[in-house]
Length: 263
Image 1 (cartoon, rainbow, N blue to C red):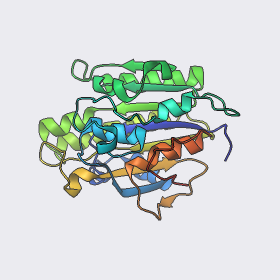
Image 2 (image 1 turned 90 degrees about the vertical axis):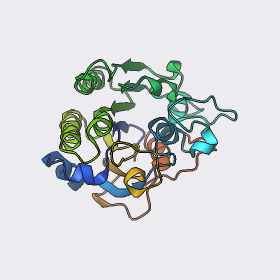
Image 3 (image 1 turned 60 degrees about the horizontal axis):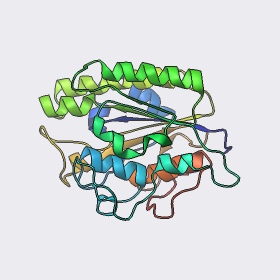
Image 4 (image 1 turned 180 degrees about the vertical axis):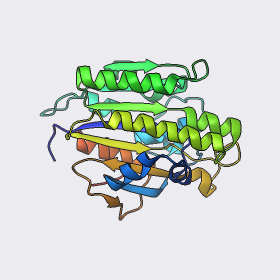
């Protein structure tokens, strides 16, 4: 491993592993064949979008970071998140260039904007093509600026699940379109890039947020030179992702983080 690694993380909101495997897009199996993965990874409870994202980026449970629904709560005892740790530039380490492309405004609270070199939000509720536009903007930024870390959030699977139901035909089509976008990004990455594809939570019926397996089980897929293809031999949790990204990029992990590095 070298510190020249770059990381792109793509999250498909509300994507169940079985939804991914049954969406009919050949890019799914192609990516799995090239990646280390778990189709049994666990998210945190409550399995709701903002708490799950806070845990993804801060590597602690919701009862530690304090956001337990889709309204951000300022942390009483702050835990530094992944963006903050990449921005630090500790002695002997170079500050990392980070960007976030997203369609759900509440994600703005994942970090302070001065920790980002590029941030773009296109509202999911007013632009049905936002996922495609955000993907194109992320690709352009990767090509033009060679950032160290890019987070691309694709919100349509969750939106479709709430509207039509998880595992509905419309939901599966939304995941398939999401993997078309994953493939577009993958095709522009260099051998030094690690690609992470995952979800924040699953869903059942037309909702999520419970401890039921359909809500709590997520896929975590990592493609890169440090990850031999095949299934992870350890249990994987959403809290493991931030420490893994930090290690890939040669950055410090926050002392409060609870997750483990996955390599």
